[in-house]
Length: 433
Image 1 (tube, helix red, strand yellow):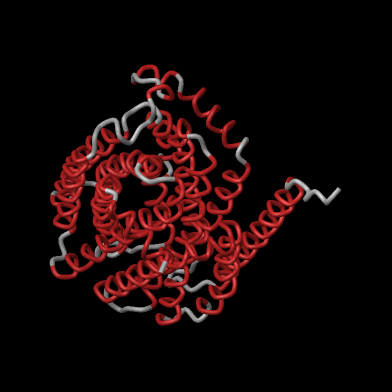
Image 2: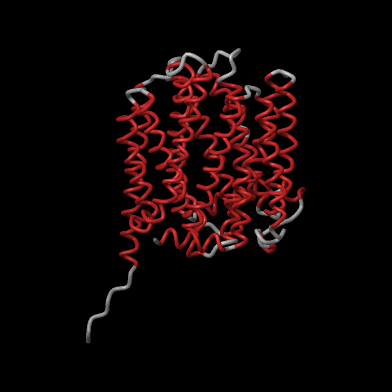
């Protein structure tokens, strides 16, 4: 099979394997840490969770990335990306340890959120750097396969880390212990990054402007240049817009499932936590399926066509499965949405990496990350307005389905426009004279 053959080739590349290992350890730690935060906010027995509470927590943890994200991009285009992985993960290990101490001491929520915000803020640098560095360790011909394997494997690692955290939390219901496990994994990621040469992952010296002071002073100009560069790459801009809408849909449904697990499907918080863990695992299986299916689908349909198929599939199946608000159909929907969301993300990553110059990739991927977070928080806010306490809202399910359908139409029209443009630009075949 071509997928298996390309996968074997990628895994023979030592530099790619080392970068992949850094991603797996980092995102496994993210999964552990995020589940620890979620269980503390949503499933603590002393807390009466509501959609508004979930939305508020997401806003506190994610909205500041609208400020951090642009700085991350400008700095990533100046700093050695290997050093970002090393020092970023060391810092997260230390900060996660501080979060564990705050949880153990039952510190006030503002202190807990401040510590968690610092951990996840550093995450923006690491994830954007991993995406920007990928073209430095694989050739152009195998970039689509690398994008299928690397980010999807990272998502699966985060899912596995989350599953490990769920299991630990069920057996040993102390949030601080789960956070300490995340801290240990961050430390492992930092140590593994030492296997990569400092200059290997870029950026190229001629495209970078070293120096913290210079980077901060030129942030506004750098962002303007990044946005101008993105406007000159309409393919990248359009797939980013489509992926932002898909992320919005995924965020709204995530809040709905949290509330269903907390109140509608279980009488006790332990049962609800187990159901949420199962939903995460099933969604992770969808991510894995996307890694297998996407390369072949993109080869046949192109990245825009595959994104259109993903969105159209979600538009049909999401209400068909979701309107019952029963556990089994919702778990099936979690698998489908995991597959289509990750499949669309693989296509988006590939289009952005292929059409954006190396000197701008850090900025563009940081903006990409900002869009992701703003969309997720916006979705949580909308869900807070539409969801009743038990999480059952037919209007929310229908609204999400309409957005999926709109994305499918948009990407279909864009693909047809691209095909027409290529056909008109092709030179005519000369006849015999």
